Amino acid sequence: NNQQVEEINEETNDTIPEFASEPLVKDNYTADPSAHVFEGKIYVYPSHDWDSGIPEDDTGAHFNMKDYHVYSMDSVGGEVTDHGKVLDVEDVKWASRQMWAPDAAEKDGKYYLYFPAKDENDIFRIGVAVGDSPAGPFEPQDEPIANSYSIDPAVYKDTDGAYYMYVGGIWGGQLQRYRNNEYQGEEDVYPADDEPALMPKIARMSDDMLGFAEELRDVQILDKEGNPLTTGDNERRFFEAAWVHKYNDTYYFSYSTGDTHNIAYATGDSPYGPFTYQGVVLEPVLGWTNHHSIVEYNGKWYLFYHDSSLSGGKTYLRSMKVAELKHNEDGSIETISAYAN
Ligand code: FUB
Image (cartoon, rainbow, N blue to C red; front, side, top):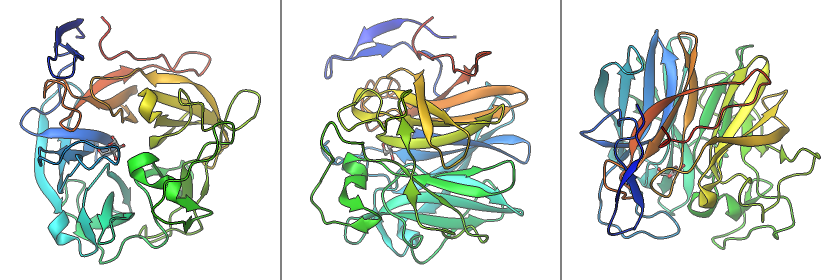
């Protein structure tokens, strides 16, 4: 169902694929899709893009999202149900703007929506809202998660029943403002190009799912020689959009490389890592950002991702899509090119 690139966007000069796999939703712009199987269906928790008129800049101010919708489907390729607005920034006491990539988790029949947003000081924190159904609505907590910072929470439930949150994103995601979990100030400070890159963070969730049971710690991403990927290694180092899935007892940590626009992956033996870089899951898509999730449903694996083809290439107006993902016999993932035949 994929077709070759057919048009050129005159504003950006980007090539626009002629509906290389259809957007899952066409009456709203949706991005950063986090997919889970809850109550036997696929539920997707995306960002809700809209055109707020804020000009594009390197902090991502143009991603000025203000609410979330939840979607579900009984089968991949089947009808997609929009469950409507489940949380609005107006209802979150501590949040001021920019509701970025969310995720959700289920525990003991309760559902938890995790989301990044800027507080009144324009600092990204992670919030949590609680509901009785995977379709929402969700009631936000009055305060962000204690000791949380940066963006793109992804909550992974391990096979032993423990839950972990992965979090972090550089540039607009503000991870570069922290060292050892301490805020260093507004200035953007990165390690030198030959030093270990800034790493995503992980913490085990508390039993009530409303906080961390431990301090956030680094998730190491190493090359095959065992050395941490470096700041200058833009093709491979972590930028944002962490996700974890487990396949044949191996943990797969996947993420966006940001300014080089790939979804990359690394593998390890523990949810904490270290993870060893393996390759590319998804090649760059139309639009600047690349953000995904990976889920197993009815014995097949799927990659949920987004691109900007529906909006004619506007980076802040994205649409979620889905493709089948294949693990090879040796455990590697077959690289997906969204626009190849
Ligand atoms: O959607 C806003 C931000 O763009 C997300 O949080 C990032 O992962 C990137 O997709």
